[in-house]
Structures are given as C-alpha cells and as structure tokens.
Image 1 (cartoon, rainbow, N blue to C red):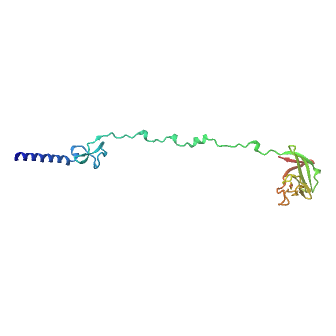
Image 2 (image 1 turned 180 degrees about the vertical axis):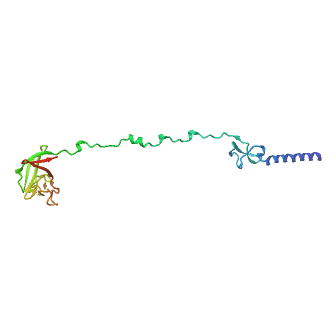
Image 3 (image 1 turned 90 degrees about the vertical axis):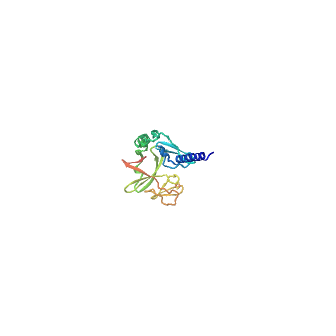
Length: 220
Ligand code: FES
C-alpha cells in the first residue's frame, strides 16, 4: 500500500469514527422525538410519557429510551366506582313498621275478682269483748275456720288456720293458741306472740261485714 492510500484510509476511518461519535452523543430529542426526562437506568424499564410508552434499551453500551409507542389513555371505569344506593342505607322508618313491638294487653283474668259475700255466722254468735272460732265454708264450699273477735267498736275476723302447719287455733283469753305446737297469736292483729315460736307469720285477716243480725265474709 502506498503512503497516499494509507493516508486516505486513515482519513476515512477518522471520519467514520467522528460520525459514529456524533450519532451517539446527539440527544435523542434532536431527532424530533421527545423522550422522558427521567434517566433510563435499566434495560426493560418502562415509562409512560406524553401518551407514549417508552422502554429502556441499550444502544452502543448506553442506556436510552426507545422511540416509544402510543398508548391509549385509560378511561375511568364507571362500573368500578362504587355508587352508594339508597337501598344500602338503613331505613329506620320501615324497620320500625316491620317489627311490631310487643304490647301486652291486660287480660280480664288478671284483674282482681269482686269479693264474694258469704254468710258465715249470726251476730249473737260473737259476743262483745269475746273471741270465738266458728267453723264454716268458703265461697267454694271448702271448710273454713274463722276466729272472730268483737271489741267495743269493731268486729275482727282472722283465718284460724295456724301459719305453722295449719292446725286450727283456739281462743285463750285475748289470744289464739295453737294446740299442735303451742304457737300464740294476738286475737285482734293476728301477729305471733313469740318471734321464736313455730308459727312465725301472722294469721290472715279476713274482710267481714255485719248487717241485719248476720255476719258475712267478703272472700276473693
Ligand atoms: S301448727 Fe300451729 S304451731 Fe305448729
């Protein structure tokens, strides 16, 4: 090879290297294609910029964004947006109507019955300042013993069944005594005379009515 030809070859090689270097160093935007301002750091990275999808590629050992491909802008999916509906919200008025509140109605049977007037004795059977026990029957015809005490101003009737075990008490002065276990009760109040006795509860007071020489009990 002549010296002239060698010089030409060297010049062509220099031009080619300069051209290649110019291509590499020119910014890609110089080609009229806007690239993402963000640096491309890894091959395969993807970024969306100005309606295009850019992928990171390696050209001449340098990482650059490719020319990009247009992407369709994602439209909001109306069906994906939850829309509150009125049916989802609780409706207190309808629930109040649908759940009837219990309204107990008082029954006639629970109301107190009118007392039954039962003829039990004659007025002379209970002398004044005396206590007597009279055996008779209640409004259902069942046996009933009643201790009557007539004071100066009133007539008192007590159930004569001992509150201990049901024995019939007997008059004993101004008291009523139980023959079974010797409990003592006040003949006017029915209260037990001794708190430590067997019959610890008072005798039941009965409603009594005296009219036209007869003694009636008003029994429920
Ligand atoms: S039954 Fe009257 S004291 Fe026992």
